[in-house]
Length: 161
View (tube, rainbow, N blue to C red):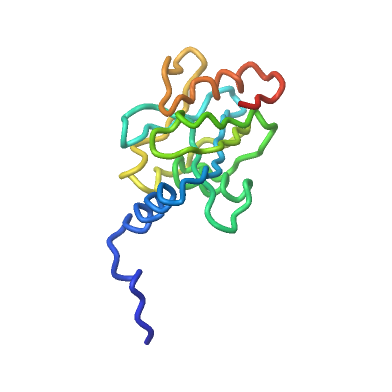
C-alpha cells in the first residue's frame, strides 16, 4: 500500500493550502458566478460563513475544469442546485480589490435553475442557500457582488470590468 501524505490532512487543509499558493504565485484566479433565477422569478443567494453576508453562488475553477463544469460543481456544492441552464454572460469582472482574499477574474452568467434540493455541502464555507423574490433581495451582497446582480437584472449587454 502506498503512503499518501495528503490522506492524513484534516478536512479543509488542502483548500487552505491552495489559497496560500494563490497568494504566493500572485496571479489572478478565474472564477465563475451564477446570477441564478428560478422559472417563477426567485433569485438564488448563498449566505457566506466567513462574513455572514448574502452573495451569488460561485467560486474559482479547479485545475483542468471548464467554466461550465465549474459552475455545475459550485451550484451543487454551495447551493444544492442540480439543474442549472446558462442563459447568457452577464459580465466579466476583474477589479483587483473586489475580493479581499485574492485577485479574481470572475465570469458572471445568468442561469435558470430548479430550486435547491439539498443543503450546501460545506457548512464551514456556506451557511445556507435561499431563494428571494425581487422585493426580498438584500441591499448589500458580499464581495461587492451587488453590481453583478444588478447587471443580471437589467439584462443589458455584457459588462467588461
